[in-house]
Image 1: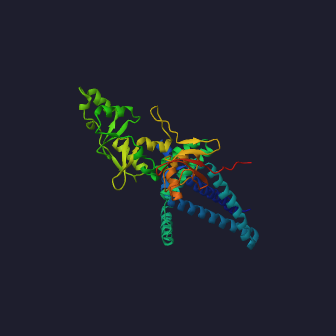
Image 2: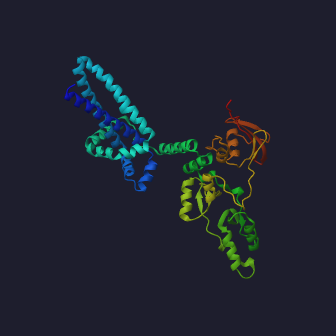
Image 3: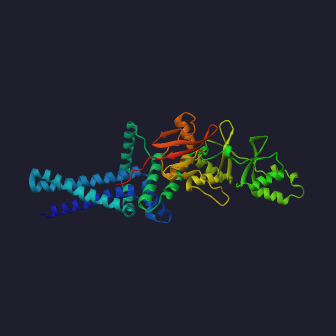
Length: 424
């Protein structure tokens, strides 16, 4: 073997190593945890900052990597072909094709990409400075390629960029992976997913309906109002005048106590309406994320919900929204709920006002909540009639039997879920 041939073979080895670096960096930089890189960058890790910067311009990054990878692969193949032709004549072309295909496939594609996939963060941090240098050097060519790709995408009418829905699905997938593989539990999955769900849920779906609201009539004697306020399990109570829908203020138990303590003389001479806070009304179509931000801005915990005509529909509190994330929050003053009562036969006796979202989260059911927010509402929507006591329906694999009805409202149902398949 001549010196020239040895130099060419050494060059082929170097080019294959560069190809492996390009392939591994492509996999590592695109699969590395962006959340972890962001965290490391905030802690002062310079290489993590480079990884984040490269991913912010991912099109340019991929263009540079693919350009470099193709250049070294083509050059290595050309050199190998020239050597093989010297050794085997015209048949050397076929030999070079077979040998280089195997070498590139094993040592420059599968091996580096598999390693990078298993050690994405570490590999990305190690190769980031080198790739950034190449991005700078090959910038003009890469920018030309990007421009050409944009034109082709526009001609094909392909949308660029990641949609919000796609990003949300990626986060949900990461949460699910954490729960099932990283030792988490279902409650954590519900809490993390609950944060993402806030934008998809309206206050009308979680509010306390107006028929279940605790109200105080401002026309009552002050002594009776104070007694009602102190006997109530609630801290904030709407007060109305002339009509229950005419809410004139919100009584706070602490404000009532302060006013009563400071007042001298006959308690009935105290105008309790002067103690009430101004009511805050919000549309029933407000999503929970917007309402949570509004609660924080106003430093308030309580809002009244109205429909498009301004009619009172119910009330929503900060605690209601937090419960959508962390589940039920109870204290020593809360009235114990018996809305769901398991039965020995595997069925459940459930109050009609129980929300479908709560049932789905508690029992891992998949009942739809697009058209109705409560269990009674779901039955009414699907049955298209107001059922009699004793009537039973089967929807979505569940059996619903009406146990109690008050006028036109279903107050209790027996729900039998579909039998779950068990492993033999």
